Image (cartoon, rainbow, N blue to C red; front, side):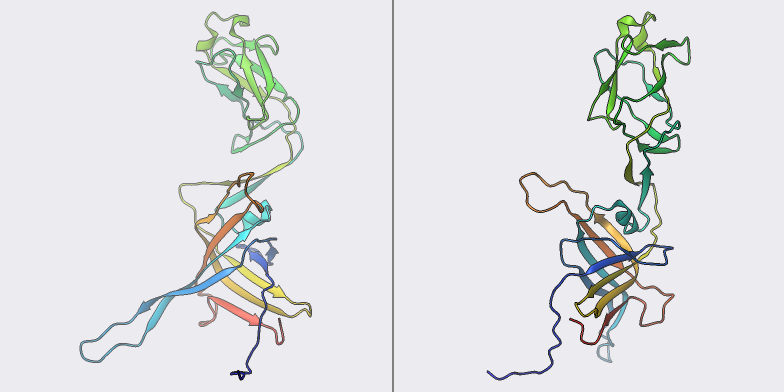
Length: 287
């Protein structure tokens, strides 16, 4: 069978680097390993009518956009924050002493032989929860702090118990029979935290009544063995609803934990007309 064309600028699949430039940033950041193809599809709305006496109008399109997806397997919380479009914020917890943990209240109606999780918030204005590898230091544990206070003592009135199900790693239980108050269970208990050193960690937080998205830029780039590049730039990208999935695979499943990501690129009207959505660049001879 004869060859039907000599035009054959083949590009062999070899993956690509995924880079993001979040709102306000001046440079791109490599977000790391992915476990899928990068899919990008140009879509638009069509405007065309059949006239009563002059045939069909020319096809007009508007609302051009690119809808895309990939699957991230690099659990780098800094990178995940950058691709969230302002939906998520990252809190760094350093392994350094803090005295900012606000008081914790165990409401009246507590019972003996019940574990109550010790919850250590970062501060009175930050609900990020801290975790401790050693028994936490409590300045005081007080029964009825707003009335006639009774200072409780460890190993007599209460016990601190290591508990992996508690966010702090520790829980507290009470022994009402050793307290001097006649009806201790009808009174609240105030836990005043001392100076404690949490485990170093990072936390992603999200959730507010409304959030204004901060558009980011995406770059998908492949560099061949000769240093030649093909790349796709998207200039104004928003995460879409359901854009990031935090799943936990079962032990009977293969592969790695994955973070499926979806997004939508829209027109950046600050750019030259005709170049406002995307660009695809190909170095001569790139493979």
